[in-house]
View 1: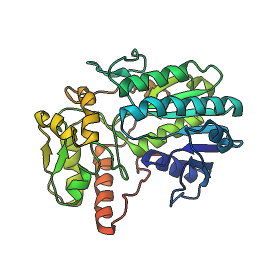
View 2: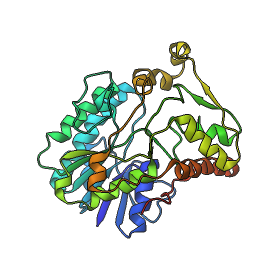
View 3: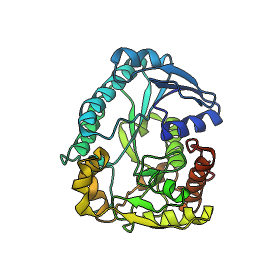
View 4: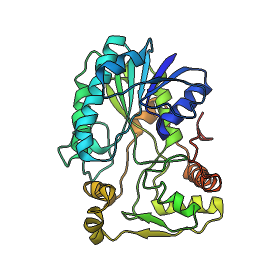
Length: 321
């Protein structure tokens, strides 16, 4: 099976590792060639250029869309619709199926566990963009398209995350983890190797699994603080956490675009953030990697990064089969 993976960040890299390990023919498509392709081939492609996407597909029968764009609302507003439209157009011509690694923003603020059948939101800027691109693929009747929606993710190689460089990375440096939200509210997190496993499950599924969205299973819900404690114990570090006072967020946001952009997403952290993945679990699997494994692997990867002064490596977790 030939699979083209658009994007080679932590998720794309974990997907490639999993597919290569089972012998698939994998092509990585993005603007610049990564240093470590794990045996996969590479083709240069600008996903925002409609004339570039089609040639990158070649004779592939499957597409994994694992791209990311800068966490800036004005960039999302133009880049995401363009990227989805380009992939839909090329996939229709190539008759290739698409698995899109998505997030959960399109539901907006909710007070109950998130389900795939919830209405699309009109809230905010970034959530509205994710809702708009959902409508794009939902209306594309000529493409087999499945959205794999994952909660905030973590894992080896994941630096830009609530549990990334400022959390696990800080612990590995002997510093206190820094949070812009409370670390003591229950929150579902998806482990990157589990996301890759879920991608493979959809790639292997029959066409009736397409034309819909699926939630990635998470380990039993806990708090970010508890996840850090598990990781800290694995590397012999002291688990400490500092929280940015909410009153300071607007001030810091004036100098930090990331903090400013996160302000509209604080609703995810004001109450327990629970993801209902029962639909996926009934069809595929439910044994997500326990935090006792995932947190330890993540902490060790950041410690290794500190020792070798290179990026934490993405791995396929031990619980993945």
